[in-house]
Image (tube, rainbow, N blue to C red):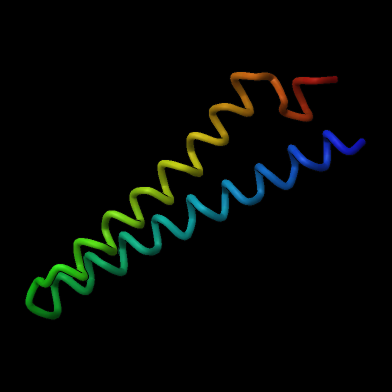
Length: 73
């Protein structure tokens, strides 16, 4: 039961990372359209991309290692 809970929590965290990464990238693009571009804007895109990539990588590893709750039964 502990393993299933850990996998479930990891999936939820990875989905939250994906959603927040998309939101951060979208907010940075809107910021680009309203003010002159500065180096902080690039930091927003980089951090959003890292969050998006990390979340998708965790989900891919869960599916690849067959740790998913649905595939283990």
